[in-house]
Amino acid sequence: MPARQIGIVPRSPGVLAHQEFPMLVLSRQRDESIVIGDNVVVTIVDVRGDKVRLGIEAPIEIPVHRQEVYDAIQRENRKASEIKPEDAQQLPKK
Image: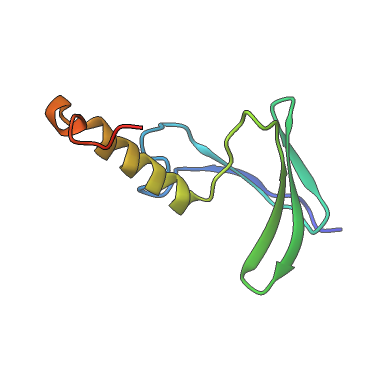
């Protein structure tokens, strides 16, 4: 069995750039997991070439998104927060 590698590296620019936390790097093989906190489990489901499939078990109240989806949500939230009150009056009423 190969030795496990553990390291801490700085995050890439743009990857949750608003956070200043270092990234913990772990090596895992298929069907192995890591536990985050008391209630999130990330399992390596499959590895094919340069693609890794992850299974994530987390409570429904914890949002889990791919990075590009998270970034899109954040952009839309920023745009929505910039709406002026007079612009909101033009929205259709329910």
